[in-house]
Image: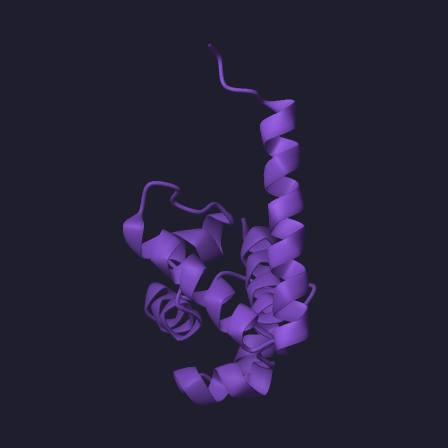
Length: 118
């Protein structure tokens, strides 16, 4: 379970392009403590610390601890959409257009692979 927390936290920091120093500033948790959670001998933090980290990253504590998302949770889905939206709109217009084109191709491929039953 400890390694899942470490891997999920590292993955989320990478995904959001957040440095440990920045997370420390957002949470009030020392950089050294956070690096301890990310280290090879990392452990799961106490509940109050995990809550601070989860809030700063806009994810659930359950996700950090288990690595599993709540598929039926509107908050979790909204947070994921918000993160994707932030990343998308942070890109130059040309790259946004490429992503739109890629999504259109993927959608056509999905329809071709999974036609609607008649």
